Image (cartoon, rainbow, N blue to C red; front, top):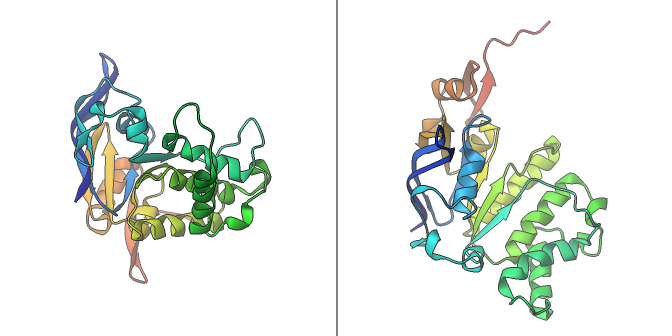
Length: 260
């Protein structure tokens, strides 16, 4: 079942600059998709359109068979959760309160979170194996832990589609592996995930599918092992890249590396 269907999506901020040009793709339920492309390719704009933040686009975006233009903000929030890059809040909220913010779409505008919402918080923390962070201050935990808390906030939202904007940005290698392993595990549990990344190896090692965007157009869509070849990688990023096999996995490496 396709839970996301994007057809001929085009978007411009000004008449003379078109950011997205007839972008089409779909996402199956439970799939893990990596969105690749150089800076300025249109990845963030694509997310904003699919989240209903940029409404003046042409083409169509359907979520679970419904056009998002026919959905209210609360209805869309019950289907899609957005996880930004790890950030520091102005106020040093507790981890529990940060995750609790994900339940706002489940309550009306005047009610306060109750026992059900508190249970969702603990369930989300346990699902990611970070219940030990309960009661801690968000600003006092590591970058990797903050990113997992933001994912927990999305899980508490009870949406089954997760959009992730470079979830491993600014994380050390160990925390990158930890976060990506948890994202992969969520996909195996039935969550549909679209993750933007600047690292094509994330797609090759973890994703079921990849969408490569260049100059606002879909340059490739499909199985990462089949569509991410040296020619495409070099065209996307403007440097010569080789795609090699390492212990059964495909990986990208810059070509012509010289070592003293």
